Length: 146
Image (tube, rainbow, N blue to C red; front, top):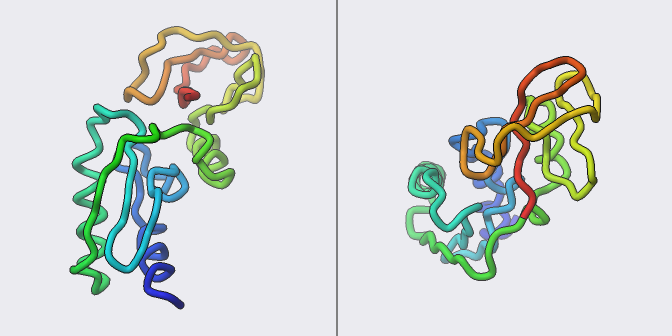
């Protein structure tokens, strides 16, 4: 295994602090890995979890013998939900968060109905919106597409 692959394997174990069922690699914020650095792009330029994510990466790298590997953040190009993996989207859905997609309707992660409506463009975190299912009446977050 190359050093970059070993570093990526470590990063695969680092979970997002706001959504602990999805890794930072499945979230798509890890842009590039080489033996000298990890390049990340936050989901939003003002993401409140950015510092926490960087600390989690640093701790994971250090505890796995990669103390000399730097961490760089770039905002260009901006992060997009297209960078999320399919397994990451499936993890969101299993957790009760509607994953991002371009379909005109949103499927309720609780009952599977598409009879849903947006309640607020602002959810529990800046990357999510609050939705409600009009079939089962349960509220849920939807990961915003962008």
